[in-house]
Length: 135
Image 1: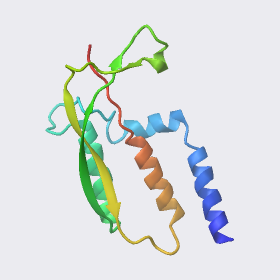
Image 2: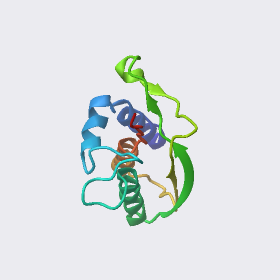
Image 3: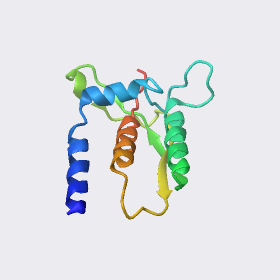
Image 4: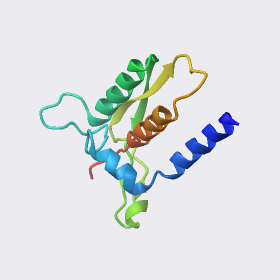
C-alpha cells in the first residue's frame, strides 16, 4: 500500500512540472546551462557548473558520483521555423564539446524520502542540457 502511495506521489510531482516551473528553476543558481557559455568572471561553462551542483548534492546524500565524458555538438538555429521548433542539425565543421553523463551509485534506503526524490527530479529537470550554436 505504501509503495502505491509513494509511486502515486512521485507521478503527481512529475506531472506538476510545467514549462513555467522549469523556467523558474533554470533562473537559479544559473540563468541557463550551456556548453558554449561561460559566465563573466567564471572559468567553467554553465553546464559544467550545473553538473558540479548536482554531483555535490548527490555526494552529500552519500552517493558516489562518476562522470562519463561524451563528445557532442550544439544544434544550430533555423529562424524560418516556429520559435519552439528552430533546432537544426550541426554542420560537420561546428565545434565539439565535452559533456558529462553523471552516474550516481549508492544504497537506496528502504523507505525513499519522497520530498528528497522530488527535489532530485526537479534539479535534474533544471539541468536539462541546452545547447545554442551561434550563427
